[in-house]
Length: 439
Image 1 (tube, rainbow, N blue to C red):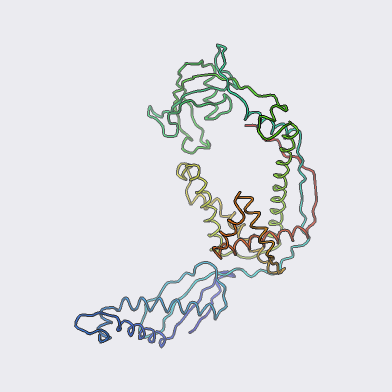
Image 2: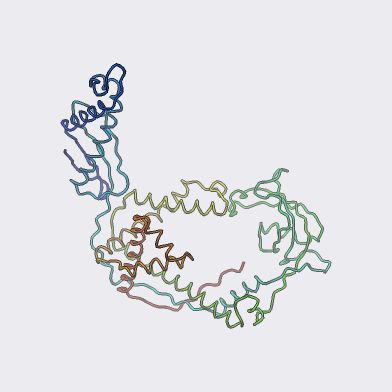
C-alpha cells in the first residue's frame, strides 16, 4: 500500500492512499467465496452458484461491502504508517471500486498542533484582595429584610404614587387583538417605578385608584430585552385592585431569629461575611486564571484545528439551548438563530481550545501526574459542588472510561494552573467591589 502526506497546514493533512490492485482482487474473491456459501439462488444448489451469476445479482452489494472494508483497513494502516494522531473525523470521498486497477482515495485529517516548550514562569499577575464593606453588609441585610417584608393594603383613600406596590390584573392588545407576549394575568404584584413590565406603564398608572380600570398604550423600544416585544405598540387593559404598603421588620436580634437559623444579628452578619468572602475567593481564582490564560496565549503561537473549535462551539450553543429550555423559552422567541450564536461565540470557542492545548502541553512538558488521593479529592469536591454523594459521582465517572479520562485531565489542568501561579510574580492590592444598583 502506498501513502503520501500532503501538508495543507500545520494542523491539516491530506493522505493520498493507494491500495494495490492485487489486494482489491483478493478481497473481491474472498467476498464472492463467502457469498457463494450462503446465497440462495433459484435453479442452483447452495454453494454451487457460478460467480458470473453472483456478480450479475449481487455486484452492487459486494462492491459496497468490499469498498467499505478496503477503506477501513487501509485508513487504519495509513495512520500507523504515518504515525499521525488525528483528531475529529476524517473527510473521505469513497471512490468507485474498480476490478482492474488500484483502490485510490484521499483522506483529509486534522492533527493537534506541535507546540514548542512553553516558558510559563515569571508571569506578572495582579491579585485583588476583596474586603467586605459596610455598604455591602447593609445591602445584604436589606435584601434579607425585604424577604421578610409584608404587603399590607393601605386604608387611606388616595391614588397610586411613585414607589407604591400595587395588585393588578392586566392584558395587552395589539391592533385590538390579544398579544401572545402580554397574555391575561390576574393578581400581579408590582412596584411602581421598578419597570417590571415597562417604566412607561408604571408612570401612566400613577393617579389610579383601587377599583379603577384604565387603558394604557405603551411603545416597547427597539432594544427591549424581550425581542418579541421590541418595536411593538401594546395597549394594556389594567384593573387596579389594591395599593399596598410594604412593612419592613427592624434589623435586630428578633429579625435574625425570624430567618430561622440564627440567634443574634451578629450571627447573621458573620454568615454574610463568610458567604461574601467565599465568593471573593472564587472571584480571585477566576481572575488569576484568566490572567494566566491571557499571559500564556501571548507567549505562544500555533494554528487551531477547525474540528476542535467546532466541538467547543457546539458545546457552548448546546448549553445556551439547554438554558433556554429550562426557562421554557426558545431561540426564536429571543430573536436568536444558530448562525447568530456561532458568530457571537466563535472567538470564545477558539480561546477555550487554545487554553486546553496550552495547558495540555504544560502537563506533558512538566510530566504532571494525578495521584489516587488527588482523584478521590476531585470526586469529593465535585460531589460537594453538586450536592451529591461522593460515591455516586465516583460511580458515574468509573462507568465510562472516556468521561473518567476527561475528568482526570480537568484535574491535571487545575494542577498545571497552580504550578503556573506558583511560579508567577503576584502583585496584591486591596479592592472594593463597585456598588451594584439595587433592584
